[in-house]
Amino acid sequence: MPIQIMQDQRRGVRVIEFTGQIVREDLETVSRLYTDRDFYRFEDREVVLFAPDASLAAIDVEDLSLLADSYIEALHQRGDQTAVLSAWVIGDHVRAEIRLWWEFSRDHSRLREPRSVVSSLEDALSALGLPEDWADDLRARQGCRIFEDTGPATG
Image (tube, rainbow, N blue to C red):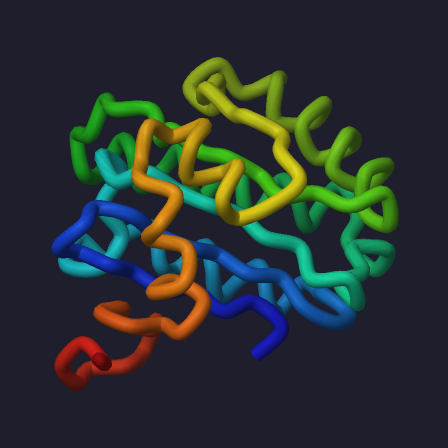
């Protein structure tokens, strides 16, 4: 899957990694995740990574609308009021698309989340107030439950 979502519930951190060509169906998978209380916890800190081969060029405004609306609906259904604290590791290859994404999501008042833009996983962890030495474990998926994986955490 071009979007891999990993949750380290013990540490309270989620990593979302984008690789390859991202299409609407990939975003639909993410939008369904928002209502999974056992997996997607709004209070957890989030790292969003864009691999060097990630492309958001196939995503249009309607696709972003689906994702933003799903997020807002999940907040409403779940009654969660906590904004997700996130750090985004963004390369120049997706910077323009991400700006569009953020510009669009500003129209949704409940989507105003604190975000940091950084250049590495270690910088993302630091920006979130987490130990940088967790980076190797997260890269290895150690202690992480991967979305749609119903088994125990690995590692």
